[in-house]
Length: 405
Image 1: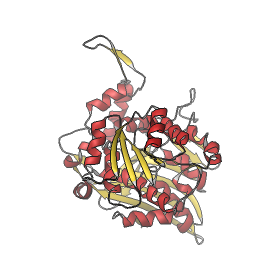
Image 2: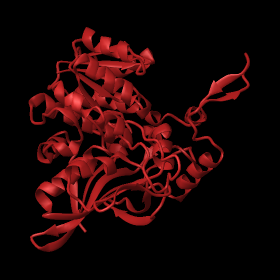
Image 3: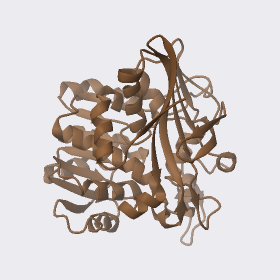
Image 4: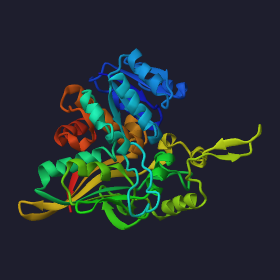
């Protein structure tokens, strides 16, 4: 397997460190718009000859397809933000390569009833091309990070081995992370966080299909394992709600994020001021008017999440809560994966949230390389058997857990 990794930020850099310990691939080309960042990610793996650095504009489909061809890469792994999903998705298909990402194509709210009806849903643009991918014998594995990704694998595992009938699947994400010296310092890309949290959340119900609600709706307190404790969680738009029902039979699917009251109020203020917008606004500059995206300005004013590891303390938990019936009896479980920031920093030099995101696509690549996972078309993690993934994740030194509720 020869991999083109596009994006050498926090998650991309963690991917290289994780992959460097595994023998399943022949080469990994690390490409970024900033060539210094690509070179730094390659340097961090200590001279492993399988890694090389290149410059790439993720929005230039033809250039990315040419880069895949010139390095004879058979896989494109997308570690950029969701704005670049579609150009990279199309570049991979043009080059005849397998495509893997950790998110999906962006949504657009319903123009008249955004908090009742779905407009363009997450992943709709990619699934619209599923037939062509299948006809050409190509695979696009979408939503293969931690959430979405591992959380979807947990849903498949629950359906295959733990339940006879599933009433509800709820992704629940929470942490007790703190960052020294900052009152507000998101542990993941603020661009992506704003996109997820301020868009209308999507809920799935079998007798209703997909529908939307108000942002931060249906608050609940969820008790997270391994000392994290109780965190208030709210509805947030997320890919699992669009993925899980395609392959797993459940009467209801939700995603709730443990944001905390202060974080929610900060996001609401950004929205009130229009600072969550992506359309450029014109502002004065030293050489005349300059067009800038308000959301990009917010991102530029905050610390890079990849640099926060030394200041960060605590644990992050990603997991899937499932309620249903097994052997005629009610059952309720929480399948989860916890990463301690102290461990991930000491072991890999990556903060917990980006490391937890990065390990899952590497595990998926290894399963594809060995043939344990295979398929064609546009597929989510639920389309593949869960047990090989969970066993290999444990072999990577990061075991998962299950709690009977």
